[in-house]
Image (cartoon, rainbow, N blue to C red; front, side, top):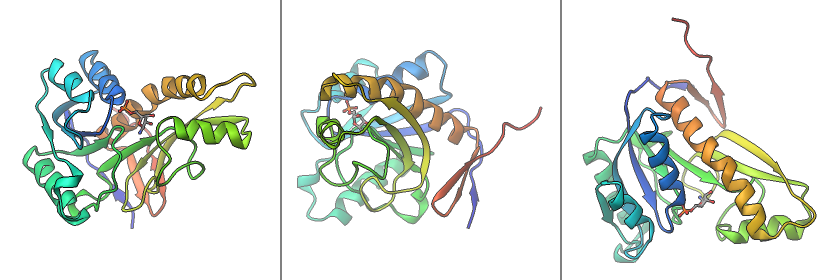
Length: 217
Ligand code: GRF
């Protein structure tokens, strides 16, 4: 069944992090430069010592810690997170370097996005995070890599793909140099996908996400 999402301005976001928060920082900068019609209502970190928490606090954003290890099950962990998302009245939940699987409840289907630093379905799934992704791309001998923004579902790096951007892999690349080239594309792709969502221009048809044209004025 196709679903058209209604436009929202500003779009209310909850951002989920586990680590350094560079993706969070990029969203903060896009919002403050008025390039993204959104507000971050809450940042939730799955790690108490995630450096991304400082980035949230420095930007004056409310930030909370919900640690996976404190929940007895994935169900409980997911419930704790989505309860807070509901309280924060989130229109969209953005995973930003968030390292855990979640069980997405009915009311958040197609309302959770993730960004992955490779061209899915290659080099995704459990264990593919951080530099490991780029090491695997280089070890395989790929000539291109890139990033994927997708709706999250109940499997790692699996839901319907919204946008992908491609970068070349160069002969002298290291995992770090490739990561930097991919990250530069991530910094454009994630805000672009969120903007399309805010404009109500994403239509999910099974695994396919259609991008609707801008409405005429
Ligand atoms: C990015 O490569 C992103 O694709 C992935 O996590 C990395 C960023 O982590 N999902 P962080 O935002 O620096 O914690």
